[in-house]
Figure 1 (cartoon, rainbow, N blue to C red):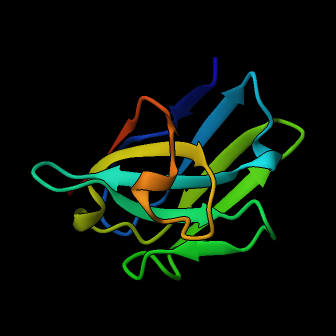
Figure 2 (figure 1 turned 180 degrees about the vertical axis):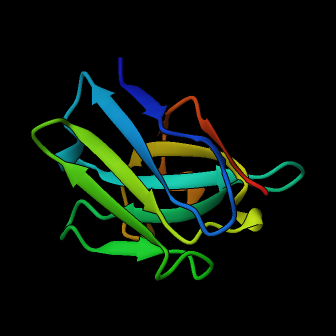
Length: 123
């Protein structure tokens, strides 16, 4: 059974940084498209960032470009989301996911999801 476990969420002040981690077990991340998504209260889940399995190219939502960085550590079978310059509007539950397809910010491309980790940006 595919398992994804997120960690690293928390409370941070505006302008601060956090790094989210997502450890995978029972499969190898390198073979899949991987992504980070978020869902704020009352809003739909949205794609934040992703790495395509085909060529390891990355994708970012316009709202996080230049502030967030996605990465993957093959040896640890773990993916990361480095978040800098955090804003109150970044507050959400963040999810990692594994799937396929070149439209890698699309929620429907991902059958496997972690449990989510809360990120709150507030002074």
